[in-house]
Length: 89
Image 1 (tube, rainbow, N blue to C red):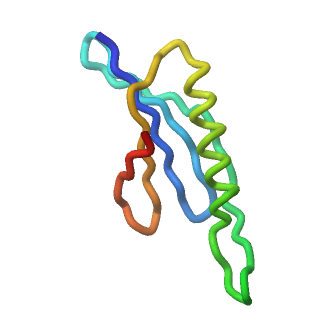
Image 2 (tube, helix red, strand yellow):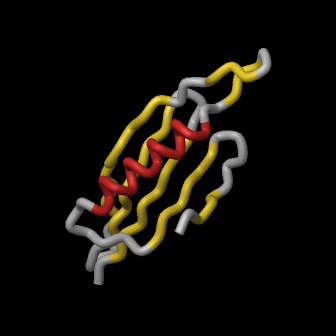
Image 3 (cartoon, rainbow, N blue to C red):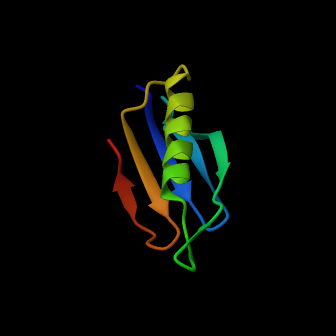
């Protein structure tokens, strides 16, 4: 049985979406599906993450995961500031 999980990693300068596939011999394969920039935006004089742009990057990565032969059962994201996994689905 094959298990696949899509994961988004958000960092200070960019993000990426990876697909992890665990195969029949308990081997983990990692596939980078999508990379995107994290360009801060200035709001009221201070810099902030552009959450809409980051969200679009994650959605593009999930779409790329849907186009792979492996069907994935869940999606997680990791954020640089929190180091926690947040289920997206």
